[in-house]
View 1 (cartoon, rainbow, N blue to C red):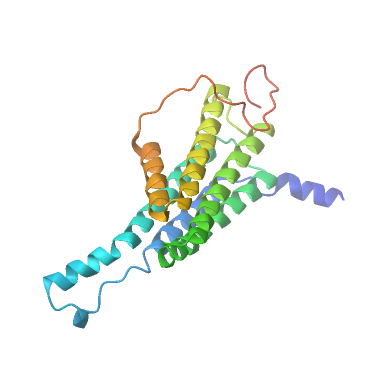
View 2: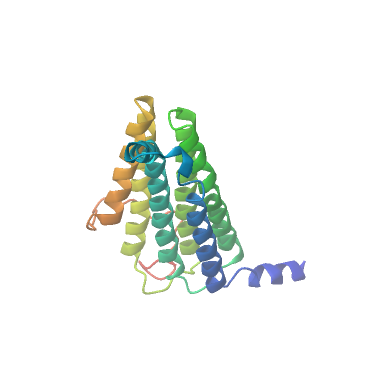
Length: 225
C-alpha cells in the first residue's frame, strides 16, 4: 500500500514534460487538419474558370479548417496559461490534461466529419461536443490546480476568476452557435467563427460579476491555494 501511495505522490509532477507533450500533439493535430486539402488534378483544370470553380467549391472546407485551426490555437494558449502558472503538477491533474489532449486528437476527426457532412446537424453537434469537451476539461483542470495548491502564489484570485469566467462565457457562446444549426449549419459555423475571432482579437475586459472559481479552496487568506 505504501508503495502505491509513494508512486502516486511522485507520478506526473513534471509540468515541462506535460507542456512538451502538449506542444507535440497540438502540432500534429494542426497539421492533420490540412492533410485532406488537395490541389485539383491537373487534367481536370482546363481553364481559369475551372480553377475558380474548384476554389469556390473548396470554400466551405477552408471555412471549417479555419474554424478548427482557431479552435486549437485558442485552447493551446489556454492550456499554456495554466501550465506556465503552475509550480508543479500531480497525478490527477496530469490525467485531466491527458484527457484534454485526447480531446485535441479528436479534432481532426470531428473536422473531417463536418467537412464531409457540412449540411448535417449531427456532424455540427458532434463538432460542438468536441469543443465542449475541451472547454470542460480546461475548466476542470483549473479547479484541480487551485484545489491542490499547485498554482504559483503570484497568480491572484482575481486572475483565476477571470480565466474561469472566460472559459464559461466562451462555452456559452459556442453552445448558442451550435444551437443555430436548427436554422442552418452555415449560420451556426459562422457564429462560432465570430465568437472565436472575438476571443482572438477583441480587447480584454474586466467583468465585475465573475463567478467563483471552480472547486477552489483557500489556505492563505484570499489567495488561491
